Length: 225
Image (cartoon, rainbow, N blue to C red; front, side, top):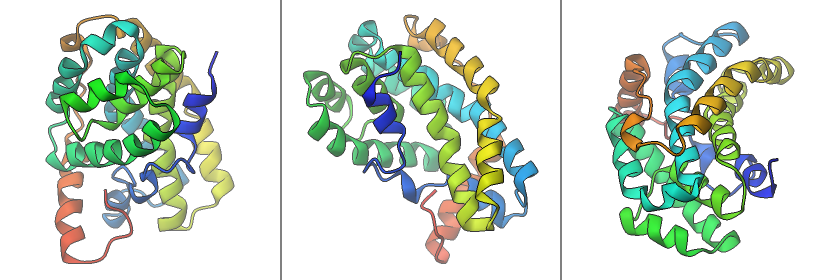
C-alpha cells in the first residue's frame, strides 16, 4: 500500500524543480507533433513505454533493500539506457534538486550512499531510495516515477498549447492500464541484475531532447527540457 513518501514525491508542488521540465513536450509542440489532446495522449503513451519504463524499473530496483548495494550499477545502467546527453543532464539536474528536499524530509545514510556514487544522482534513483527508506515497496517507487514521466509533460501541454485541462487530465488517467504494466514489470525486475533492466529505444525523443537544448540556448524557451 502506497505511503506518504511516494505521494509527496509525485506531487507537482514537491520542491524538486520538475516544473521547469516538459519531458520533450515543448520540442514536440514546437515541431507540430503534438497539437491536440489525441496527439498528446499518443506522446504520453510512447514516453511511458520508453523513457518512463526505464526510469520506473530503475526506481523500483533502488527502492528494494537489495538495490542499495547496487546503486553504482544502477546509475551506470541508467546512463547506458539514456543515449541523449541532454536527457541524462535533465535527469541529474532534477536529481540534484530533489536531493536537497529529500535530505530535509527523509535524512538517511542510504541517500549519502547514493551521493557517493555521483553528486548529481539520477532522479529515478533518488525517488527509489527515498521510497524504500520510507518503507514503501518497489512497486510504489515505480508507480511514482512512471506517473511523473507523463504528468509533467501533460501539465506542460496545458501551458504550451492551451489545451482543455479537463481533457488533458482525462488523457492522463486513460494511461492507467499502461502504467500498471510498467509497474508490474518493474516489480519483477527489482531484485535482478541491473544489466537486465529494459532498454527500449526512443530515438525521436533523444533527437528532440538534443535539439531542444540547442534551441534553448538560441532563444527563450519556457522549459529547460
